[in-house]
Amino acid sequence: MTNVRIIAGGAFRDCSNLTSITIPSSVTSIGSQAFLGCFALDTVIFEDQETEWTADFNGGTEIYIITKEDLKNPSTMADYLTGDTDNYISYSSLTKKQSA
Image (cartoon, rainbow, N blue to C red):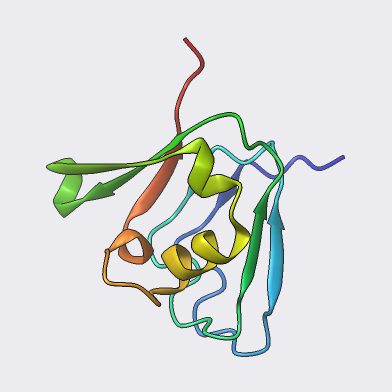
């Protein structure tokens, strides 16, 4: 069991040997650019796949919802978090949505 709640911005930035990671269900926030440039990262598994996340762009003026379907696809999440895609999630801070 882990007590990690926050992955800081830039925490794994440019870690060229990182190929996979599991985000514990205890994590509620991932800082901006936490995995940017980790282009070997091809698998990101979220333990909690039932709670959507939000990605804040431009100081929160634009919001993107990371859906449960996205979370269930480890290669999609790797693309999102490393910057290997045309959206800008890798530059955003991510926040786990609160349960209703």
